[in-house]
Length: 258
View 1 (cartoon, rainbow, N blue to C red):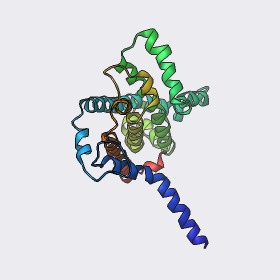
View 2: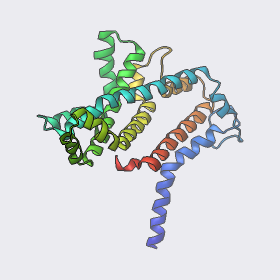
View 3: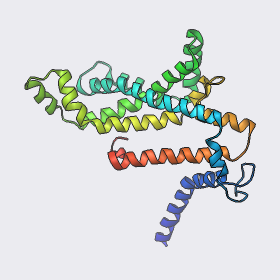
View 4: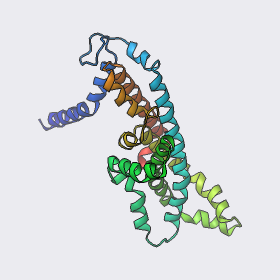
């Protein structure tokens, strides 16, 4: 009896986690003209229509730009910061770690409103620049925390040996440290990319006319049109995110860093 109860609990858990994905996949494959589940027949026409909507293509390009270059910028800042926090005794290091983690801890709505009120409006920043800075700040904690985890697992003896053999600190970092933590850096990039690409609350405050990320564009689209194309696009994005995480887990062992 206990064995069946465990299997039942496991089945309900999987249903709770996977059920919404199944609903979205089949809702996007509906042959009808409105978003319904169960679908009115099956067709792939709405999956094909996703690629013909101009606003989806433009917002996808913007989201991709923000996810890639925002994450790269966060890594350029986060890797040196993680190295300093891991290798040196810095006064107030715990406070610094808390401040760096603030974008994860503080609700996204508050972050978006604060950036809009105290950065975009007073300084008259453009929408794209504001989104870029916001997405960089949002993924910076992942860069610092994941890279710090890799550095903590790397013994400092190797670096010190390189310095004793004549390398400068920069040479020891580029030739010894960086190659040994590249898995953590790549894991941080993937986590940052997925987080940035799927970001909603902050982007909702900072998006503007003609400049919207893909999740915000999908919300705006549903206010006007209630066809299954949004469900189809949601399914495609879910598959993309799952594929990225799956490949990262197989190649990098992503779970070791998070």
